[in-house]
Structures are given as structure tokens and as C-alpha cells.
Length: 453
Image 1 (cartoon, rainbow, N blue to C red):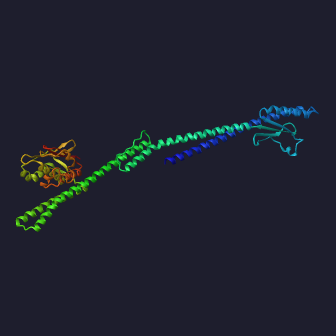
Image 2 (image 1 turned 135 degrees about the horizontal axis):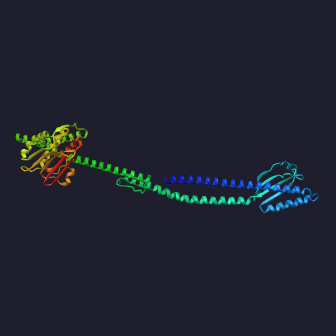
Image 3 (image 1 turned 30 degrees about the vertical axis):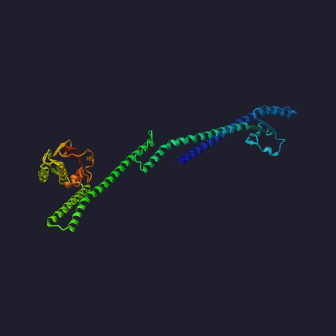
């Protein structure tokens, strides 16, 4: 690309330069020759008029007229020879018959191998067409000077062409350097180095291209990071799901094999089938939660006004028995009356959070606080407990499917690690933001910020 641009530009420059040189040379030559022809014509007229008067004055001499005429013409010839002019006077009465045909003044160029002349011929006035004056102006030196000037101009053009060739090369090198940088960076990005950037100084089109390229590279890097995170998340989901489903399947297979091969009494049979039903129930919960997650991704909630006091009352009634079994307190504080959302989804969200708090609290002295209040232009629903708390490094992973901070404790309580993933999905479906703040040994606070219409 750079070589083609260089050759095309340089050839165009040479064409224009040579064309200008030719035009200037032709113009100089024509102008110089026109000036010399006009000068020669005026000088010829002057010589012809003067010589004609002198010949008329000599016409009364008589017998010595020819000798006097020759001396007169020799005098003229000697005088003008100093100015590179040669004159010849032809007596037409003694010349060939065809010479009588010249009536008007004629001007032309004559040249031989070494010399060049402006030739003018014509009949002398007032001499009864007897005499013809031939005028030769030697312009050999003038033409030589003109050729020298043309040669100098040609040398200047050649030197200027060489200088321009080098200058054009370095100019194009500077112009194409940013493009080479862009090409190099593009190859690196194509090879997987997505953090590659280019830096071009100045405020011009190339710097704008560099800026757009960097913006494009940043977007590509961001998209690649998103894809990598999604791929890692999917792989983690598959790994967690495989691990989660393998345990109940192993238990079901083990108890079924045990029931098939071992002689069991009625109590042992009931106990084994109960284990199978418990594990099947766990798998059913996982399937339902996954189905709910998939549904939330594709559906938009049908929003309506929700009575927060009534919602909190329903949640309290649902959790009344589990709270009594663990001897925990649930304090409901509806600080605002109405929330815009889909009631069953919001209820599911709060129940998931409350059951998570219930599992993390110590029996007898655990307290769960369910609140609703206005904060700026948002309605904030929060679930706070004084349970075990969550390590700081685990908080960002809480909403990942099947992630559990304490796998042993979660399994003991029947958890599958999908509750907070559902909560996040429900919040996002309502355009809300969910935050988790927790300290190990002090408890956890989960807040959902609903923007009011």
C-alpha cells in the first residue's frame, strides 16, 4: 500500500514537473525568437531605408557609380558585421530572371550544421526594383545561451526530483506509521492480546482513527471478558449442578439397591422409602427452582399495587411454625403502605431471604427483622438477622446458582443454593437492585431498592 502510494504520487509529480518544464522551455524559446525577429525586422527596415537614400545620392556620379556603390555597401557590411549581421546587396539587373519575383519583404530562419540565422530579404525602396537587400542575423550564440539555460533548468528539475523523492518517502513514512501501528495492534488483538492499545499524538484524522480503534478494542476486551465470565459461570453451573444432583441420585440408587437385595421388615422398608422420597423431594425443589429461574429470564412481571402490611402479615403466618420450632423472633416493620410489583414474586423473594436468615440464626436467641421504608425516591425492603454472617470473599458469589457458603449446613437444612439466585432474578425483573452486607459473627442485611414510578 505504501509503495503503491509512493510510486503513484512520485510519478504524478514527475509528470507535472516535466510538463511545466516543457511549457516554460517552449514559452522562453518562442518569446526569445519573436523578440529577435521583431528586432531584426526593425533593423532591416532601417538599413534598407538608409541604404536606398545613399544609393539615390550616388546615382548622379556617372561613370564611377559601381565603384562608389561597392564601397558604400562594404562600409555598411563592415559596420554591421560587429553586431553579427551580414548584409548583401544584389543587383537584380545582373541576377537570374527568377530573382525578380521578390516583391515584398520575407523573413525566415536559416541554419547549417554549426550556425543559425534570421534571414530577411526584400527589394530596396525607391530604387525601381533594381536592388535586393539580403539580411543575415547570426543568432547562434543566442540559441546556445537558450540551450544552456534549458540545460540548467533540466538539471534543477532533476535535482528537485531527487530531493522530492526522498522527501516524499519520509513524508509517506510518517503518514503510514500510525496505520502500521494500527495494523500491528490489530494483529495482536486477533492473536488474543485484547489489552493492546495504540497511541498517536496530534489532533488529526489519524489520531481520531486511533481513538476509535482504542474504543473498539476496549469494547472487544469488555465483551470478551463478559463471554469468558459467562462461559466460566456456565461451566461452574454445570459442575455445581452435577455435584448437587449426584448426591441424591446416589442415595436413591443406594437405598433402592438395598431394598432390592436385603430382607427388610416393615419399619426398615418405610424408613428406606422415606429416604428415597426425601431425596426425590430435594431434586424436585431443584427442578422447580431452575424452572422458575428460566421463567423469570424470559417473562416481564405483571405489576400492581401491593399492600405491604398485608404482605408482611402473610409472610409471618407462613414462617410462624418454623420460627416456633427454632424459637426465633420475626419482627415486621412496614414503614410504607404500597409497593408496585408482582405480589407472588415479591413474596417469594422475601420468603427466600427470611428462610435463609432462619437457617443462619442460632436457636433461642435469633432475631429476624423484616422492614419496608422510603429512602429518597426508592422503597427499600430489607431482611436483617443476627446469625452466623457471611465471609466477605463469599458475598459476590452468593447469587450464583448452587453456590453455598457452608455446604454441609445447607444440605442439612435441605438447601440447594438457588434461593439467592432466584431473589436476584426477581429483583432484576422488577428493575430493582439487591445488595448484601454481612459480618461474620454479627449477622447479614439484604436490601432491595425498588424505584418508585
